[in-house]
Image 1 (cartoon, rainbow, N blue to C red):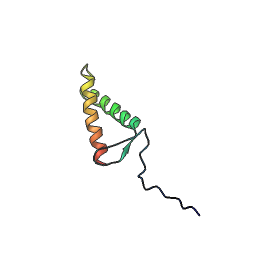
Image 2: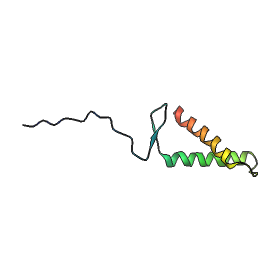
Image 3: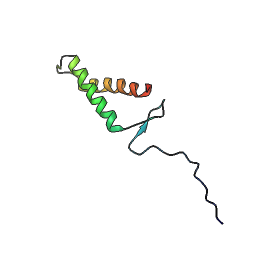
Image 4: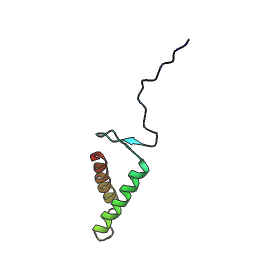
Length: 72
């Protein structure tokens, strides 16, 4: 009679997610980008939707959203 070994390896997160450094929770990259996009648009509107540095808006939004995900 053969016995089978159960795998003791930890299961990996799906390939389309990534873990945050502190929480270890998985984040759907599409959801993350959508949240960042929305916040970058809000930042643009907050400064009067004037021509500005969209890259700075995106980077600021990215910092805020990633911080929010780490705190969950």
